Length: 501
Image (cartoon, rainbow, N blue to C red):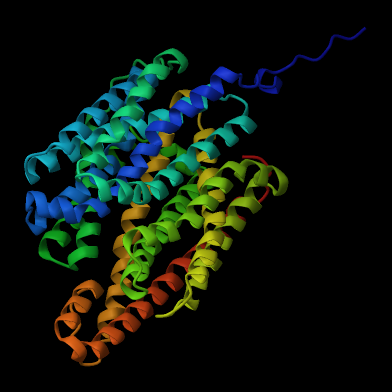
């Protein structure tokens, strides 16, 4: 009788996750929810912060931007650090920093203290996101369950971005501005109480020295680049913005050169030889660029063109948040049904078509048109964001999943910054070009303020400014949607022959 053929380790199915593991996933959703909320909630609190702390215009920009700068610049570093010292450890340390900085921000006596506290919050946030995502890769070895878990994780991020303005609006209606930071504390207390008992620890066994030079070069490259992008978006080209862009680009080139030669690189460039890996990162970058830029412009559209208040505008954004969250969870099932290639390419195409559909909006459109179009776009964004994260994290060995998640999240953060800069600048350029002798200011809000001071004589300039802003929104939506459609075709070609993630 012939011997049975040997069974390879890879052919043995991974054990399914137990109830304790799913409880751990619920705990990991908490920090992600907070990080995404803090991206959006501060926009509502800024008017009262300005009235209380009297920051300069430059200080206002730093209060808003330093948080995102720190997260974008440190995600890859903190993902690698968590791989080495322990993902649960760095998650809890980051939560402690985030919680302590939230208290400092809530009771900041001046703008300088608030900027410093927001920087510390960014430092903590940069550890929370890659650590939580990397732990999911360890906790769910079964690829199907891991895809579902990452979809739930993605839905928490989308939910936080949607809940932030609504919750912030309600709290700011009753309390002082510091409450938007204090809401982080009880949530992080739950994370500590349950996380220590539920979450597993994991660290890589590498003995190679940590890539300190890579960390320095990455920060010198990413931080000036993100600053330049935001500076271009808010004030247009300037010597400072151009200088920062050139310096950041030079440092990024030096970073890539160093990483190609480092013994234990911070960024494993060999991952990018995988066309699917690179295509997924492109989807993350372009998808967030389109979603972030259009979300910023449509928020202005809802309030300044249609005349809705802040809370009503936030509620109008809920349908999109709901579809993003729901289809992030369902993304794994969609990919199983039609294949990752068709799911990823199709979701990018759907998001692109719905974004182009915003051309239907006018100066007096019904709110349901906006809500329907953005809800459809949310279906596409939810599927593609979850699949991108799952494919990127699943394409590397578990010991490197922290670094891979850092790369993925950095693409999302840079995409958001580019969306505000590129699409925001395009819309502003169209807005100013449509000025037919009315004397528009640099923004729609300032133009409407000047028109209101003119009384009845300002009605015509106000109407013209609203129409010009809608024209700018149309061009930005066409640009963002068309880019998604092109990328959809590229992904479909690049991932040819791939049926499984």
